Image (cartoon, rainbow, N blue to C red):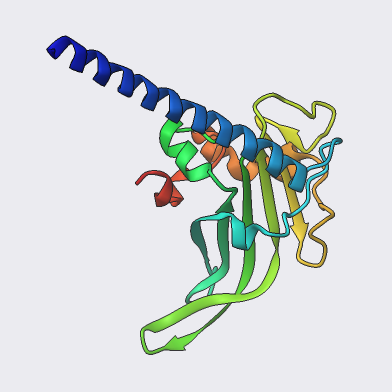
Length: 192
């Protein structure tokens, strides 16, 4: 009788593990193809996803301090494609197809009852990254080091102004090389 219960429990546990693995694989593959189709074309040209504010997950916000005045000169608000947070928590890495969108805002700073406060002002533009460990766009200078990289001015989310990731984007990410080029310490949701 005990043996039968142990076998049943073992079988149920095996099914649970297999189902979870299948779900994670399916989710990663679905996110990969869906996000790639929405954000990058066959040649590797990247654009800002139109629906990121309603369908992506909020990762965190960075405040860039003003050089001379109180408050911040910029706010960077970062979003990740659906499923990214769970996948990162499971593996400790961003899966292929992950899309990160950073909104960059100028700020408006002023006095409020809580003190000097900075809030979003005019949108300066977006920085978009797409995880690609397979090097699927080897001839495109905006792809390398496992990512697609592009900056977009606020007036044109479909046309990047970046020409070469190693010159335009990578220098800001050198300190984050050990965390796959992303400043993961700024995103507590990935580590909870």
